[in-house]
Structure formats: structure tokens, C-alpha cells
Image (cartoon, rainbow, N blue to C red; front, side, top):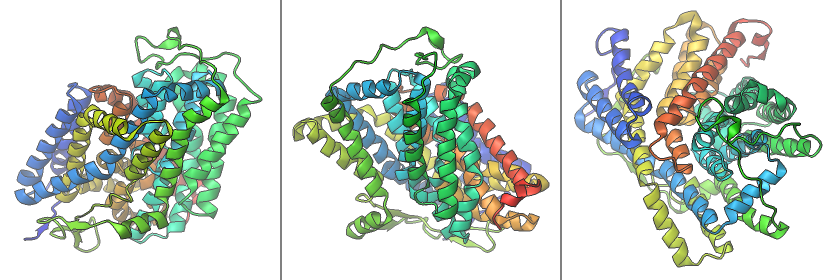
Length: 553
């Protein structure tokens, strides 16, 4: 039995849009305002999504259940597997004391917390975004920041804010490549267009990050270092995306940015060293009153040993992200399982697509090529280097599973919710509401990308979800399809900081369990504000000279 999606079941887009938004609102209100535990809020959102899909949109109950189950599998692999394995590595380094040495070595580059944020959350995080994506950068940087003494809210929230500008080119350009492949864009033109939108925000985000942490005055005290960090990243991002392609944009830009900042700090240091580890004006223990202990000095050999597990991680993650490696591993083991009762039975309908289109639902058990497997193997190798024996490694892994059990459950439930909204068509209803804004479409079309990432947790998924709609709407309004396809991806990056799975990853990495609502409340304003700025910038590119000259047709 097939089923055709209906995007306006009540003959009123206003009512249909309100109903489509109910599951997301239930989850966000439960998480952010009712202070529910994350897995309860996600469960409530999933129940609401099932009720809306079945009783309002007429989706067969069995099909709705299968859609949720399909998303749950995706929550376990690849997302949950990444979270579990990166926390496993962190636990290994923490328990043998090497993580403390690593913290002190970072503090040795600079004791200024603002500069540490630039180096770790922005530049180092961008490297992991470019190499792996899918929550890896937030997990790594939040864990390092909490180890350096940052408060849980600061470590979580600031890692999420920092992990924005690199997202469109994350996982070796996967969001851009996927959009081009699925919706018929030219991949180089799309890369160029995104590369003419995001560099402005790559320059802005480091300033925004330090302002969010320490306030405007403290931000201005280190503006030269922020400018070096952001400008070097933005320039490399523009050049690589426009003249090479989307695959290595983040990796190259991150390395350039880290090298530029470290080199600059050898000749420049701020007059005043900022030692606060809490968010200014956001925590009662924050401000400049909370001071971390001065870092200890360690022998060079000890520092090298402390960095070795993370160097191993970097190599494994980068290698695992290479397309030839993924293809080789998938050729060994990557069985595909069409989801019974769902695969090719749900039809996406006009105006979301030009002609009725069956929605595939094939779960690929690509365990060998999954990023989490690369991280797991790096943790095993790193653990052996750190002198753990196999039984000790097994014991730490078991304790890690128990530690993150509720986080894994939350991710499973949230991905189930996201998958159900896709197959029931409620996400398309929300997208069509944005698409009906006429001359304001460049702004609201950008927010469509933001919404897609906020719902799915993935810029790639958002591009698959709304990339075709962006193309159709742009052609109807006389705009460049490349402009709006890029806007979907560029606007989407600002939704990354509020998507539920990223927040859970951050809370897990900092061991700040059951505080996901606090993180959401902190980052929500930053997400909305930055997404709106991207929308305004895209609007300028659509209508105003000389910004129009940047558009790739």
C-alpha cells in the first residue's frame, strides 16, 4: 500500500502549519522551559509527531511507526556511535592523567581563556567538522574545554556557537556534494556560492564567540587575535571553495587558522589575561570572579605522550573520511536493509517536487566505514599506547556505555522524531510556509535551511529535504537557483547549534547530564540572530548591487 503526502490537510496553510509545528514545539518547550529530562522531552515530541502524522495528516499508523523506527536506527549509527566512542577516548585519557597534561600544554600556549576558545572551539573544532562532522567537533572540543576548567554551560554553549561557519563544508564537503547529486545542482557552482556567503560569517563568528563568552569590552581587548583567526579561516575558505572544490575547505581553512593564531601569539599577547572560565552575565559563578589554577609545567616527552591519542584520533578520523577509504570499507561490509512497510511507499508530491517521487528508506549498516568506528579504533590504539591492557580497555568501554546510556536514548528518540516529520510531510508543510513569502523569499528561504538543520540535526539532511524546493521556488521568482541552494546550506549552519542531537552531544561530552534545556536557552538567541543575519546577507545578494555581482548563475 502506497501513501501520498498531503501538505495542507485542512485546506488552510495557517492551520496545517500550526499542526506541523506541534511536535517540535512540544519537544523544545519540554526541554527549554519545563526542564524535562532530554529523553522525556524527545519522547513527548515523538508521541506528538505520531498523533499529528496519523490523525491530522492521514499517514497509516504502521507506516508512521516504521518511519520512526528507521530514524531510531540512524540515531544509533552513525550518530550515537560517534558520541559513545569519543567519550570512550576521553575517559581513557582522563583516567590515566594524560588529559590533564594536554590541558596544561594548551594553557601553556596562552593562559587567556578567550584565546583558548579561538584555538580549540573555533579552529580545532573546524578541523574535526571538516574531517568527520556529525557531532564529532562538538564532542571533542566540549570535552577539552571542560577539562581546561571551563564551566559546563560555557564549554557546551560555546562549542555549539563555534561549530557553525564550517558546517556547510563538513565531512569533506558532504552537504554540498549531496545537494548537488540529489537535486541536480552543479557541485562547483554550489561550492562557489556557499564560499561567497560563509566567509563573512567565518570572520564574524570568532568575534561573536568571544563576545558571548566575555562581553564586548573583553572581546575588544583581543581583537587582533580574533581578526587573525577569522580572517585567515575566511580567506582560505573562500579560495578553496571557489577554486578547488568543497571537499577540503574546512580541513585546509582550519589548519591555516590554527597556524596563523599560534604564530601570531608568539609575537603578541593581550595586556590583560582573562582567566574566567564561566559565561559572563549568564552564570552566577561567572564573570571575572572565578579563576582557574595556573597550568603546571610538564616535560616535553610527557606533553608528546598526552597529545599522542588525539593525534591518532585526528589521523583516523581524516582517513576514515576519505571517499576511497569509505568505498573500500563499504565493499567489505555494508549490508543494506530496505525498511519494510516504508521503502518507496511514501510519495512526495508537488509542489515540493515537480512530479510525484517515492521516498527511499534503506538502512545501510556501514559499521566499518562509520566515523565512530574510526574513532573507536583510534581509542583502542591510543589506549594501548597509554599502557592499558585489553581487559582495562573493555572495563572502561563498559563504564562509558553506562555513562552515556540516557544520551544515546535521547539521540535515538530525536532521530526517530526527525525521520517521522520527513516521511509524514510535516516538515515540507513548514518549508512551504517559508516558500510562500514572495519578494521576502531570500530571507525566509535561508531560514528554511535553518529550520531543516534544527529539525534533522544535519546540514546534509536539510539540503536533501529542502534543496529541490529551493530550486523550484527560486526559478519561479526569477532568482538564481544556486543562490538559494547555497542559502539553504549557509542558513542551515546556524541551526546546528540548536538541533537536539548536538545539544545532547555537548551535554554528554561535558558530563552535564539533564541540563540540555539550559544549553538550549543559552544558544537559542545566538542561533536566531545569526540565521537572520545570513538571511539579510542573502537578500542583499539577491537584489542589491554590488552584492548581486557575487551570485553564481
